[in-house]
Length: 213
Image (cartoon, rainbow, N blue to C red; front, side, top):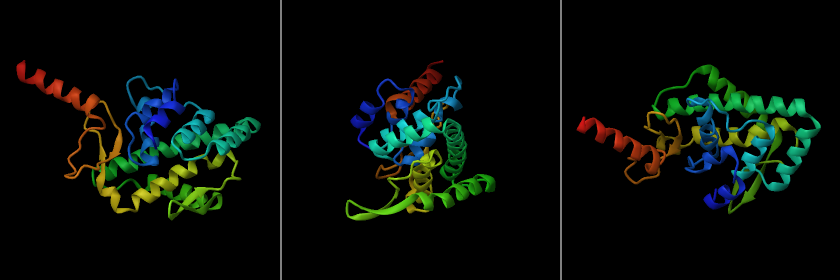
């Protein structure tokens, strides 16, 4: 999505960090939103169902009107909304493991793949084909308001990437404390860091210190 638009939508929200350095696909951005909980502070950036809906809107995965409908649906059925958020986090961590394995060019575990398969099988009933920018795309049905559907755009994005040639460009940041996933769009496919200004520079400083000690 447009970087300035993402920053505007996520201003002052903890998950805004996800969009500082986009992964190149919705599913990768979602996996990267778990960086906080996987870190030393163990802080979940997407802390509940409303934050998940906001995140999807900020990522351009759902339009604002549908986000509003999903938020109203969640407020009406808080138990279902909480369950949908918990399941989304479970799916996120499974996808993270699947993509991390793919970045290492190894197969993911069968249980993780089965979870993705099961979630994808339910996406069809909440999706439709729409003509967009000269091509057909799968999109969440505008009338879909059940909290359970919030994870569907992410799962579709994941399956699209996993079954495409673009997967060969998948990388995981080489930073010691970073687990971000991204698509390497450089011509020679040599990108190692999620962001040179952060993880890349930290590695440079670390190597310099090791040489002078």
